Length: 511
Image 1 (cartoon, rainbow, N blue to C red):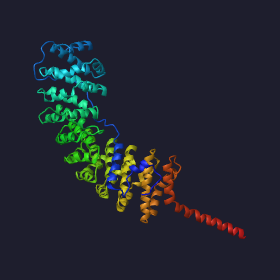
Image 2: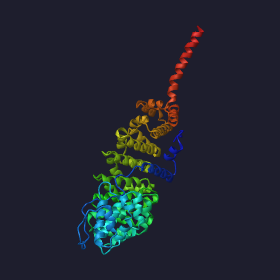
Image 3: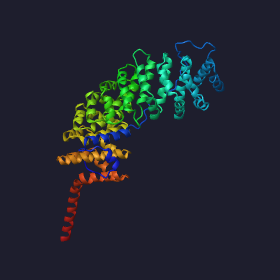
């Protein structure tokens, strides 16, 4: 490929033919990290329990009094009482106050020093109702700011919450799962504290086909938070423990469980080849491909994200994804009515195109070029940018015959108008692609016909206009293309005219 005056950063991220495969894969990971900066809004990190219906542990409920509404001062006084019934009433009132849908006074409870008392109530095995209300209150405090979640951890809540995972009362157990999920969702530091406290084996023991669906949803969501974050990643042993259960949950019928399981797998594959290999080796790829056909966006999005991550791995891992049927479902996702899905699908396609020519041949065999051309024509710009990367990776990794197929697919028609795009990097990539294709055509003696095609498509005018672009790299790249590939025709036109004029002048002088 010709070397243009391009910034070092762009050259580092762009795939060039002839480079070692491992180097190319590392470049794909660099691009992946940039593309994955978008927030994963589809799944929340923390959740407050604002349900007004209080499930009741299967044991005797306190008989004195009924649920009452108390002020914060009365709650403080009641929670510090030695009477278990008064403590229960105050804690229940605290939980209700913390469960308000709007503006719950989380910080007031932290500042009032009530968290250690709530943690103490978690250990009251003779009073499961009190345990339940305390766990619920702590769940909601832990759903707040990092400082509020940290206050729950510093009060020593994690170990008592893990102990409650063995409670004979399912509602107490479920609330403890929820609280641990909020703590783990705060970030890698607290996630790792939960893991190192041996929470995972207790959580996995709870997974069965007999527990209520709402309970299983909470467990799955908590497991996904234990997989989240990669600075650092969760330890390999924790991942090893969770993967068999995640594989099991991936076969469930409930969309929420499937969604959170797929998000968990997407977090685990968003990294190095070894991390991807841990997931791939469980044999989940065919199921993930199947879920990519789901009509439910909350399942489709994370399953596609996971498969997109997998094809940033080694050539072997990418081939496993292809063999699992990825290319059978990708064309429809490139045409999906939702732009975010088109973008994810195009990103996935670009990483497959960054592989060896055998992978590129499979893209051709699965008829991936027509939907790619359509995206370049009609997609939103953020989707078009991903499509441009696909063309670039395809072109620079293709054999001569494959490059011929790419050009004859009609890709230049929608590609050339994107030279007017406002994004500098996109324009530079397109200029690189054009330069590479022209250079290849020149070696094959086909440059003249390619130049005519580019001219018919209005490409020469667009490239010439870029010579005046304010960005130096763009103007220089455009100048190089014009001088190297389109200058000869101009000389053929200019020199005969000059010769004719000189001849006229000489004849006039003779007279």
